[in-house]
Length: 230
Image (cartoon, rainbow, N blue to C red):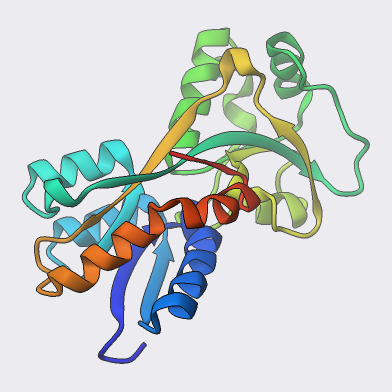
């Protein structure tokens, strides 16, 4: 990263998307943007602590909280994408049925280990197990990925038999098979939002970047990364 680059911090869910968007932006504007993607919980903590960044890209509810804390310029917020949760298994294992809520519940009960993340998808999946009344049955078999570590990596390493995470974080990994998204009846779409940090002084440059990544010119890149334009 050079001193002239805009500095962006994001969760891992938008890592590959932002890499594509930054490449598009550089090609059209000639301006440099450096993105650091880490676990969303850690990213939010660093922004809350006042770390100097120009742009923050996190789940909409986290951006809202950071705005209330005075760390985000709330009038600059732009919704980028809506992202769904998917399910994956090791590549060498025969696919299983997750096409209905009942089938997915049974797949969880049958799995010797179930992985989830520290992000919005992980919180939702644990609540889903509670709702299904199986939290107690699977408690000893669930594995939480460390912040910034894809659940798919644990699947590929043989540490997890059935994993849940944002589709964008699973679809580009080797050694796994993405079975598909959660059934519509239990799917959760998380909106990821970008905004300027109140600590940034590069107001015009940030505005240009935010305007571009929210524009129709970026819609195909968003779909290619398993997300829906917001």
